[in-house]
Image 1: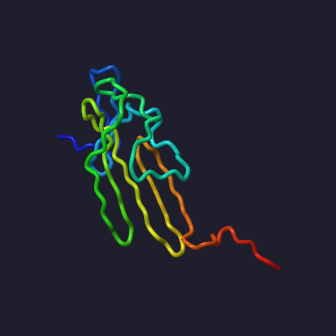
Image 2: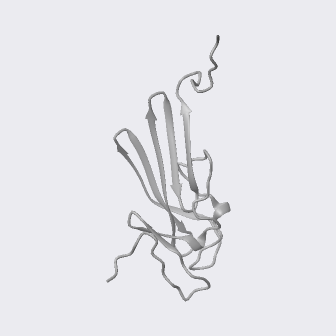
Image 3: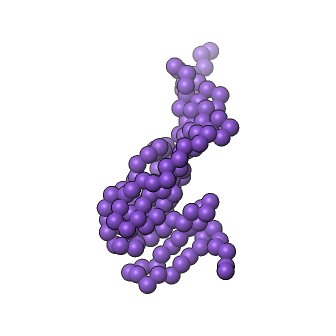
Length: 139
């Protein structure tokens, strides 16, 4: 049996060709989204779904709310990692795997998000009352 590669593609007899991506062993469907991994700037979602990017399920052809399943929170080396799956509410087709991270580095909180549906984003926020990046030098 052929081992799937990172960009494994599968042909379907349904209305369109399914594009499946294997990320850490989880299949995700590129035909359910308008844009794969859209740039979301600094909008990092710890939970929820970016439904504006959901075009409809490639399996059942319905456009409805998403189910969130297999949600887990783990901590590795001071970094919190939240992962969960986005599923079609009607047929439970796996649309995407969502990963959100949070960590504290020096005087900053750092957030990242990576998801086929919700997109990619990162943000850094100062934990100090006055953000040192915003301070101006006085001469």
